[in-house]
Every structure is written in structure tokens, then in C-alpha cells.
Length: 301
Image 1 (cartoon, rainbow, N blue to C red):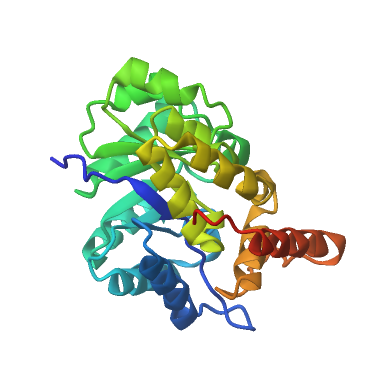
Image 2: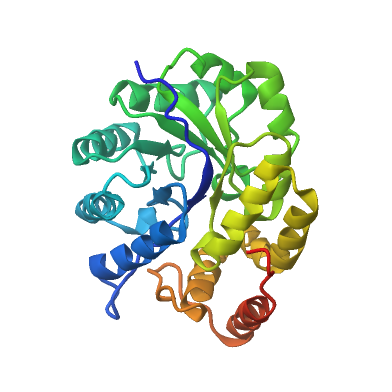
């Protein structure tokens, strides 16, 4: 059975890039991924919320997985998001991801449907049984209307390849409650950017981050300061970063993060419908925030 892969550090929720006609742009996607790896991130999470996985068809998902595997070339682990409408389709994607050579899966509840605890357990347990890859469960009640409760986690504790949890609930008490209940059974990752420092100070071993796409060096410096116990530096970076980190908690987080990435010269702001690129006052607001952050970057980074 799978044992813990030792994931820790900064894992950007990498964006998927599109051409002007909104077809998949593999070259541009690899370019932003390569830049992140060269900047020193500790892993790549693809095809999640920020990666717009639900706007890609089956073949496109596999193409992004294969391209990311090639970019990584073993330098950092690649974790592929699994978010499907049915458990059966999630199993198909998980098996294909393993064949393609990704290093792990980030599994979401089934899209649209809000399950009972029994149904949620069945979904996760069935996917885990279909693969030997280590699995990170993605808990994001505000976005997906499903809370992976402690009761569900207790039922899943015997599933050896469920090894980690990306915790995106704004309730930071989870970072204390889960270790109190389960010890070190699950590796915790902070998943909501504007409570990332709180999560890491409370024991999260890593951060799956959206705004790292625009400011990777500062994200890495923040995590390094936490590791060193340098709270003064961590707070200075976090305070500087916070206006942008709040974007990760908004309904237009994908558009905002991709726009920030674009302003910083790291990618395109293009998104697939039903999302539309930011416009009007909101676009001006986000650009102004990014430009201000770029002009006041902390020396510690």
C-alpha cells in the first residue's frame, strides 16, 4: 500500500493556459510551469479550481497531465486534480493519470451533487481503490458546498493511499482539530491563501497556493520564514501579501489570479466560459493591487 510521499512546502495551484480562441495551449502551460519550478516551488498541483479542470474535456486533461509530467521531469511532484460529475468517471481519470506517470492525485467531491457522508465516503474510497497513487483530499465547503467532516475522515483512515488533506475551509480550527483526532495520519496543507500563515503556524506542512502563480519568490520566502521560526519576517511578508491573498477567497478567484499572473508577465489572463476575463472597475482594481504589490515587494523575498 502507498505510504506518505513526504509532500511539504509550496505547491502552486498552477494555471492552464489558452490560446486566443480558447483552445488548450500546451506550450504556454508548460512555460508557466517551468518558470514556477525554476523559481523553486516544491510541487505542482494541476487541474484544480485555478487550473480550470472542469472546463477541460477528457483528452485535454490527459494532455495537461502528460505535459506537466514532462516539465517536472522528476524535479518536483505533480499532483493532478480529479473533479468529475460521477464516481465512475473520476475512477477513469484517476487510472489514466497513474498510467501517465503523475505523482499523486488531489480528489474533490463529485461536482454539482451534494452527497451524504455515506456517499462521500463511497466516492473517495472507490477512487482510492482504483489507483496506487497517493491522494490528497480537497476540502472546500465555500466553493463546492461539501464539507469533508471528521466523521468521514475517520471512516477513511484505513485507506492507506489517502495521505493528505488540502484544507480550504476558512475555519482555521480544523488545523488543530484534525491532528487532535488523527495525529499525523493525514498531512495537512493550507488551501485558502488568506489564512495560509495561520494554517502553517498551526501545523500545516505545506501550502497549495493560487497567488504563488504571480509571486512565487515571496510565497517561498513566507514558508521558509515559518520553517525557521522567524515570525517577524513571516508576518511582514504576509501583511504585504494579504490584499492579493484575499482574491483567493472571492468568487472570481480564477480570473483574478490569472490576471495577476498576466500583469507579472508570467501567463495570460484568458479563461474559459462560463468564466469571463475581468473587465471594468474590477479589472482596474485587481491590476492596481498587483502593481502596488510589485512596487513594494519585501526585501526578504
